[in-house]
Amino acid sequence: MTIEEKFQELNGIGEGAYMPHIYYGDPSEEFSLRQVETLVESGADMIEFGIPFSDPTADGPAFQEACERALKKGVTPERCIRGLEELRAGGVEVPIVVTTYYNIPYVYGIRDFLEKLEEAGVQGIIVPNLPIEEAEDFLKVSRKTGIDLIFQITPNTTVGRMERIVESASGFIYIVNFEGVTGVRGAVADSTKNLIGEVKTLTELPLMAGFGVSKREHAASLVSAGADGVITGSALGEIYMKNLENPEGTLPEIGDFASGIKRGCREGYSSRD
Image (tube, rainbow, N blue to C red; front, side):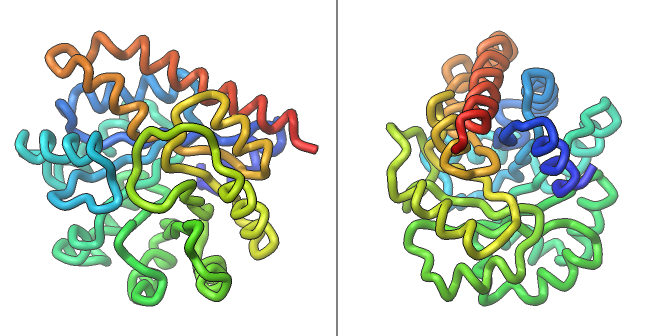
């Protein structure tokens, strides 16, 4: 199923989309596989599958530590691709969006990297440190492989830059709720809701809001304001990070968290004007 098809399905039944973000291999590859399965069983509509990187500049402390632990365990891009293949072989059917910093596909070779992802069953890719102004070569290859290249729009993105992004993007637009790095925050700012409204005037692509989403109420507020779904990251990671010796023991709590966020996505959709 493509990302576009998933949004069509959700719009048909009146639900916002939920996409949790995990970093593969933290604290183990086996746990990551079980975590994804738990998230899907608990209502996740898509999965954001992070490839650990040594300098994850867009991520907050929780995910920086996750990357460090995974890398110390020897997790490589090749092992991440095998993990993706295992998820598909194990019956995970929802769209998967890979997040990777540009250095990894650049060293790997952009064409080879994207072809490997396509073969592993990936539908989209987010490259946080690839600006739209430098994305032409990447876009050419991603379009040939059918993998959606997803861009972020922040509160400080100019209208001119927004227009350039929406002209090139596919899949969805990632709306960044706050400037800075990922992490758990308080209430959803009015500026975020205004940004959602502004971007909606420029594109018909779905909008997924992330950075700081940690509560059902956040999800409901964002979807009610017009976002087509939400992304969670650090809040999810902090659950299992409380028990790194036995992360499997936190899977029920992870499932409850995911169910709550998905419930907020439904509530937000039903409360739209």
